[in-house]
Amino acid sequence: MTRTPTDFGVSFSLKQCRGFGLNPKETLGWLINEAGFRRFRLMSYWNEHEKEQGKYNFSELDWQIAMIRKSGGEISLCLGVKQPRWPEYHWPKWTEGLTEKERSERLLAYIDTVVTRYKDETSITSWQLENEALLQNFGVSIHIDRKRLRKEFNLIKRLDPTRPILMSTSNGWGIPLRRPIPDKVGFSYYPIMYKNGAYHKTVQKPWLHRWRKRLIYIVWRRSSFIHELQLEPWGPTAIWKMSIEEQNKSINMKQIKNNITQAKAINAYPIDLWGGEWWYWRLKKGNDSSIWDAVKKSL
Image (tube, rainbow, N blue to C red; front, side, top):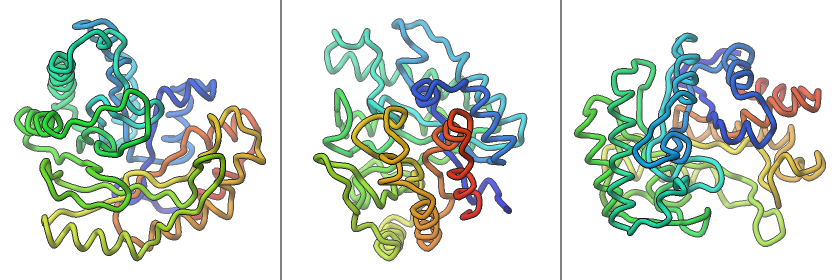
């Protein structure tokens, strides 16, 4: 299988590893050395690195970056309070008693700290700001503030004008029409969703995203990419609590092949895959290589 950093990447979450009961270093090591990935989307969870106000500890993020740098890989680093994995909004507990103005100020200070710390890291090739920033009705402690979002965007541009800022600024169907306008626009691609006690096929089709991609380029002269391709189950509870039969209802070997084939047809690269921790969990805990085999054969 031939893969380059500009073709397929994978998201990696320390929190998801914990949920699966996996050793995060072993999991990332497997994604690098065995699975062969060289492009990663990493998270700078606020409630991980500033557990006490003004006291920062980036040791967990430092080793992730170091491992990828050593492999010659590249990183898109997420910034902000809304980052991949549940509960979506990763507020530190100490922010609960703050006013909205104070929380916004502390968030900007945190982003400033992260960008300043890592802007000279050569393996980081882009920033992703506020994952799916304007997506409503999904997550805990949801807070959508476009004015604050513009401040975050402008802050990052001031601190590091050299790297592109990636964003998914709307839901699965919209295009960015109001500022901030990212340097590159990310799409999610989820063919199977779980909602209101049932599995549903979405109407997402490659032709629709190709249309979106063209329209975004016409309006803003911005390119698009797939920042999250569904390659793990979405069911009634956390994956590690689901039976294999339940997991297969939304993702199985056939669906994996179908999802990757459809994503390729959009022709919006890179394609960042979603589910690396699950593939390793099935392999490590379940002695089941079928999921990773299906991914590998389809790329």
